[in-house]
Length: 77
Image (cartoon, rainbow, N blue to C red; front, top):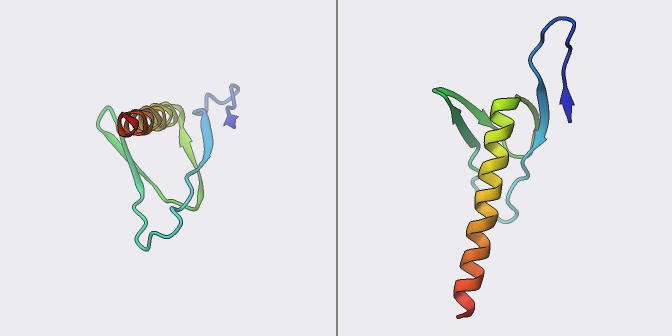
């Protein structure tokens, strides 16, 4: 969900939630770096991030989906 205040020129922010992994004791946070700027997203908590990190997160999730699909189809052969 995007929030932007055009009157003040505020930065567009997106609310994201990355779930904890069931059955896994240690939960690694998700770390994203874009153009030398790094953020850390805690799993299991809703946080707000700027568009550049939201776009990077979307690409990361899409790449993970492709990798999972490849692994599943390769295991069938």
